[in-house]
Image 1 (spheres, one colour):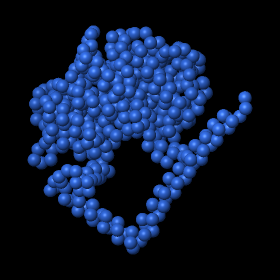
Image 2 (cartoon, rainbow, N blue to C red):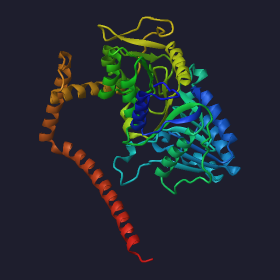
Image 3 (cartoon, one colour):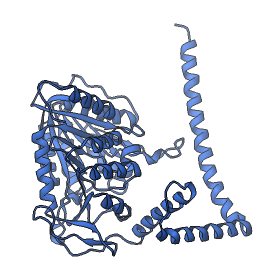
Image 4 (cartoon, rainbow, N blue to C red):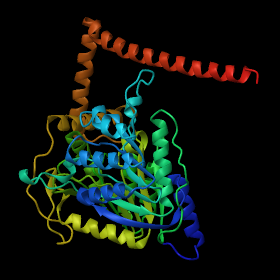
Length: 483
């Protein structure tokens, strides 16, 4: 994965594999700047918005009605009043309870445009499951930003309550890669309904530096980022250091990381010690054991919340963006990341990773479940007191995952069950027996929920069929009509 002036056959093969896997070409001539934590992000983003002369394109999962959200609203509104084209895409679920249509009235009154991605509607039974999880900003087609940071004061912490800022990572970009950010925004804009987005002038593609990168703007069911994460785990030769906010290991990826660690690769995973979504934290912990057994080193962040999504491999390849290492990001959401092939940037990200580990605690296997890791090297771990994290919902989710794994293994007989899994099977057997008794004695208790679910899918499937039929008839009429 080392860039050379005269590519070797193996390098060309690797570049082809990476491009086809990610579904994104390698673009040279870029300049990239690493942004750490929300304060640096917000200052850079607001300065860029205020400097805009042609267009401002903002796409973010959450824009909250608080002091940070209003700072951005004011900056966007001021640019719109000056005749700059301002377009904003926010996610319906992400902004639910965070900001509503009234929040955007000043911007719309000034001529700005706002679209909400994938709000609930009839005809799409499970459409609400797909979210726009991207966080990006593009200014005048020449400057771009992408990150894991949402526009919310929550990311700044709360000094009065002794809550430190959230730990997050992003980048600022100049060069040909910015055009790919604009294309990704246009795709989300068009998917949010209304007239398609068209620019008066093409974005600049002039070289701004010497960094090569791929912009990976994933859509639901495209799995480009999932395939790339798998491939990097297979290609890493010396090191693979991962940071993730909502890690939920699926078997193929856990196996890829485990195989790399067993092959001598220094694989590390840094995840939150405390999480804003306790259910995900519990699911994450339920998957530690196979990783630790394979030699993957797992660390938990000691701060308020670790929200960064990064990877750095072999000191030459790096990834930064919005994608988490879980099925929602890989298969369901719209995400945007950059995969950077540059030793200088990878070194910056690796140095930041080592600094982060100074505020993290290593998790190791021990006879009594887990114990806190000993201080191996001063640059790697810092000891901390054990903390209780997650409530009853988190423990229930983790328990459900363990039961599902045990029952699945018992039904498929694809792996040997351990003697400790007998309790999960007994619990499942008793629950199924109880459900059988209820279904026999009080069938309505089981029948009514099934009927309600069937009715919901019947209504939405019928509406969708009617919409497609109407489109088909319109197409036929358009073809049959004389000139």
